[in-house]
Image (cartoon, helix red, strand yellow):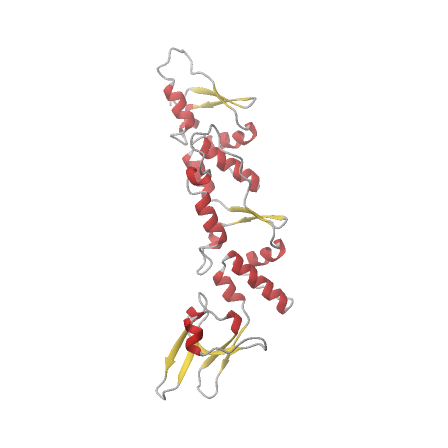
Length: 280
């Protein structure tokens, strides 16, 4: 579009006037396609483009087209912007929002989660990256089965209403590197259950109770963990020169070296043979 030309777009009950330079800043788009198609019409001036969408959301899209960085205010604002970025076929804005913070409501609170926080070893892929990748990967996947509709359907922001926002806030702090002060064994177990739900496997291993001690008989270090925290992928059988077979263990995604394993068994748990544990 001619950069010096001014184009009129009415969204809802509000008229916007944008330069060709602004409209061309994120193109090809619904706007550039429409006005280019009118170039050889009999009108001396370009016609007004009428769109029955929200002028409030469009104001932020105008700021984006004018070169300003648009930051979603909350989960609803994010969904509205993302839906209209696809509706108006704005590839740069859609990509910007796809790579922005993850906006989600946990319990009664909203969280803005930096994506880089969810890429640590063992913590990715997880509940959020998997959900957002499949939900926001393309217009067809954002609004499946809507080809031919005149507008996208209403979409609610991602939410997990049945889980604790307090526990999730503590997990976020742990992902940032802040140590968690466990109030009780029950508190630790509640956090571990949340780790498993959100698929934070690496964080789970960092939060399980364990102890490392020196075995005076073998001169090697032991690692002691609860049976319910045992992960088969962390175990291996080691044969020594004395034909003594030992099970070695390192916490997945956390430990670099394996240590001789000591399993803590509670009264209501069964003791399994080493090869049964590994096979299971």
